Image (cartoon, rainbow over all chains, first blue to last red; front, side):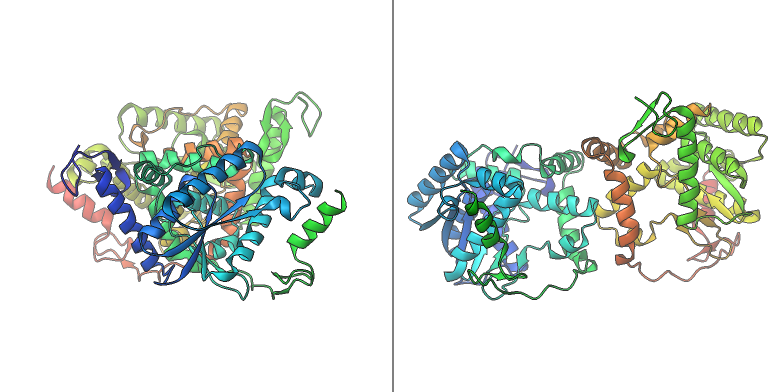
Length: 297
Length: 297
């Protein structure tokens, strides 16, 4: 198997692109792909200060690596969710990556906001699922840490996006479909959010991390077990296997057809009376969660 | 396991409806479901003369049975494709069902239009796939036989529809999405076409045929092996198994959101100069196929 670019020995097959590549050429290919994604979807402008949300996993660390390699001024944000050994290991990976690259990593700890409690306990007290509480808290802390940056970048890859997309289509969540985009605009204190990896598959990101020697956490969050998103991913993997390129076609076709889905009008936002975060209610959902959980400590 | 309707012994579990039923109550349930589908989607009006396209399989024979039971004046049309033993067996099933019900069955034979040739040979000569030739020929012969009827009914079930839908969405075939409907209107000599089984799953239709003692052909068409529609069905079955009701939700959500997809303007139709069938070209695709194939006989 020969590398299509340099004719050396290929180590990775990319059936979706009908391409076999060696290690070096694959890295070039992926960096070019991300640079082009950023350009064609207008995700970042040169000189913008980017905060990369890193979980310690392959996607977010590779994204950070890619943005640094592409010359962006990119700092990292790690949010410690307090999910036992999983969170400890994740943090170690994020910290050691930052040290190796000489890049700055900001750390936010959920327990600092919830009287020492971590996500699982917060969820129990709030009588909500861990995943819904985790999403709410991460969004809030990301926006808070993003204040001094132009834009927040997350490591959502093609597999994540097509899995959301399939779920949103199976349930015809037309509002969610209208909002599902590789770039969400600024809204006053809420930072712009971008996903530069939307055209890179999970498998490609794993290969990139491996070849670049990025040490990442292999475990999935213990709360993601049995989630519908994993189910959708496995259904889409089956289709991709039979017909390579299915995921890319599905996502790119969606980007073109997206305008068919019109969101209900965006509700008016106002600052939370407690913390100033933009919200549709008097007190934002983060502060309400905080109050509810802390009352019971 | 008790029947929810009569409290007798249930024999079928319908997780999508959270319902267990005995044989008799299941038949009542399915007949009511089809009657309601016909009513709510305005598929048929009382007294209309219906031509049911029957393949000899469970869906189309059960549809015929259901329409007769619901009091419609329904005759059958069997199209002999000439696919060896598969076609012979299918025809026997259709004929014996018609005899048992005392209903009238019309038979069209592809070979009568193509100098004795059957679908596989026609496809070879036309250098097209069997499935594309078969679709073209069946549509034509259905419309031809439908001239003396108000409407043509086909046995497409929920699984067929969600499999089309998934395929159309994965490839963002927005034109096909705009046209995918349980009812296609009349266009002059082209008969209205309706699909009364769109809310009944393949499994429900198999159970109906079994309980009603309908003898149908179990084999699938040999040319359908490895088709993408079977692949999509298997992916959707997996999702349905994990989350019963997924297919129904997906299809009903689509019916509500369908207006988001706007077809390109319908092209002007004119009668084929050779046979009078409505077409966008001078000579319709059926007559062109005929000419091409017969030239080579």
